[in-house]
Image (cartoon, rainbow, N blue to C red; front, side, top):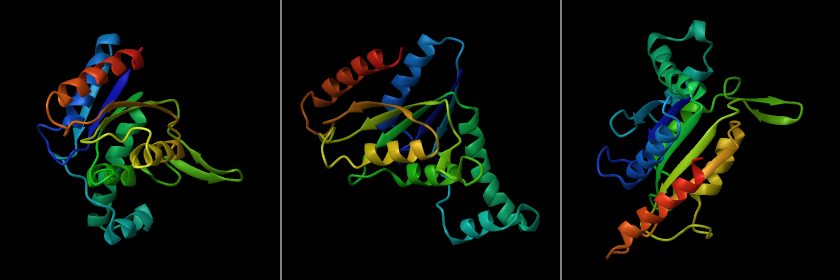
Length: 199
């Protein structure tokens, strides 16, 4: 089993979403000792945003790309190869201003490529990244689970399903900014969810 952990916090240390993702990966490795874990920290290794030069590079036939364009596309290719090789993906998902981080959005933009990770057919779009399990390690300062204010989970489930990843399991650590022992309670509840979810 290949486990790919993607940390998408703006912080490379001290991030609650990374802590939660680490807990999920640790449980997976305890459950499957033979598993191989690969971690990509998008704070330490930022991926460029999808901008006009990147779009132009992607839309230029490979044989006609400049060296700079080929290098830009190769960055996305590396992320796609990681996802293709993974059996399980653990996404550390902080909540910033009710949405996902720019780091996570850039990762999703990079791995969504027509003809490679999804395609269009007579029946519409088809995701090509099938047979994978995705764990969302959702860390939030407030309480948003199952409320209209949680825009993250519907978006991520839709985006991942578009790419073929429909087995998506959510682990929550919420109320982290509420003070007192809220943080400890949140991670204790998350630990129980991990035990129940990773089987």
